[in-house]
Amino acid sequence: MALVPPHGGKGLVCCLLQGAELQAELEKAKTLKKIEISPRAKGDLIMMGIGGFSPLNGFMTRADWKSVCENFTLADGTFWPVPVTLDTDEEVKVGEEIALFDPKKGVYMATMKVTEVYEMTEADKKWECEKVYKGQGPDSADDKFWSVALEDHPGVQMVMAQKKYNIAGPVKVLSEGDYRERFPGCYMTPAESRAIFEERGWSRVAALQLRNPMHRSHEYLAKIAVEVCDGVFIHSLVGNLKPGDIPAEVRIKCIDTLIDKYFVKANVVQGGYPLDMRYAGPREGLLHATFRQNYGVSDMLIGRDHAGVGDFYGMFEAQEIFDRIPKNLGPGKDLITQPMKIDWTFYCYKCDGMASLRTCPHTKEDRVILSGTKLRKALSEGAPVPDHFGRDEVLAILREYYEGLTEKVEIKMQRAADGSIMK
Image 1 (cartoon, rainbow, N blue to C red):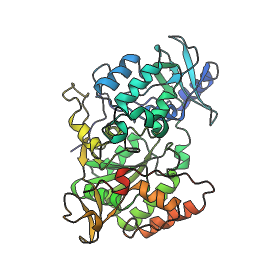
Image 2 (image 1 turned 180 degrees about the horizontal axis):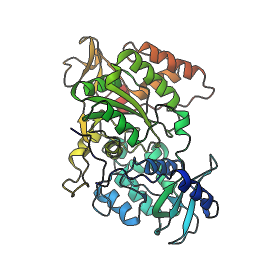
Image 3 (image 1 turned 90 degrees about the vertical axis):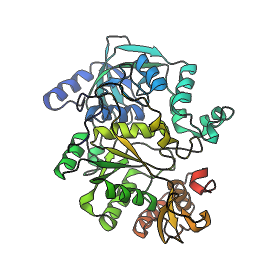
């Protein structure tokens, strides 16, 4: 059997230029109007460059943006779960070629042929937030969402801070940033991950999404996937996170240690991808499955509060949303990667091992509630970490990181992280 095909029915759509063509376009970029881009747009550009966002070859039109928010599809009917847009305050004309510039690194990231310019009013931004970021948790209640989200939801803050216009059009990507140098052997393109899976003879591959250090629940999820698939792809976000989250360099070191000591290496691959987190909960779970299809992944592990933040989302809303997305959209247009839905997992003293709500008959008093937020809070405050929360080798790496911090960020606990809503 073969790996799942890339999403969209067009193969891997890679907008990154190479060789002489790249050099010529870099020189051309210096002559064009320079538009500074956000870190989020930089990550989106790189994903378009390496084929991670296939079939996208540029930033979305208003019709695409509206259809994605409302219908989970691009304007042509292809499944897509979150907007991928480019904002600016600059006056840009349709038909104009522009250069997209990363002001933080001082690098030209892409050139773009502008096909549409559309204004994003305050009402447009709020509508996008309500469609994409509002969930079924208590913080998303109609009488609460806007009073909480503007302060506590980084995805909502990002959208509401966007500039006046969105500009659409195809891109020619000029750089992958410094990810390949910073994360050698980990950062990889979809073509590279597919080559590894094919070399190993894998066809059914599960992905574990990580933005927190890998604790015992993550390890358990990965090993469930190994039991039923050919292998597992531990795929970490190496783009930007919210304050208080742990940097990718530290998380990757933790995963390397776990793979070395607690996994059969032939059955696991570690990788990194260059996006920023949107913290869009269920919608982001769908995005994770969509671009993982491009990486060759057939099954996306979806556990408790996937890609969530605060109490904006229902505990298993990111699993349930897969049952509500449009299907039978046409050749190549459906999402093929499927969710591997796993119940709330924990260590149970009475079971004497890892378990879930489906397998453990005991009470929450017998369980060690495992969550990345809870672990970060304990470590940031110098508090003891309960037994069986993480592997000793991993906790040693994390303690060393926290001891080296000169400035601490307060970690807010949510219902799932402290286990208060577990029955």
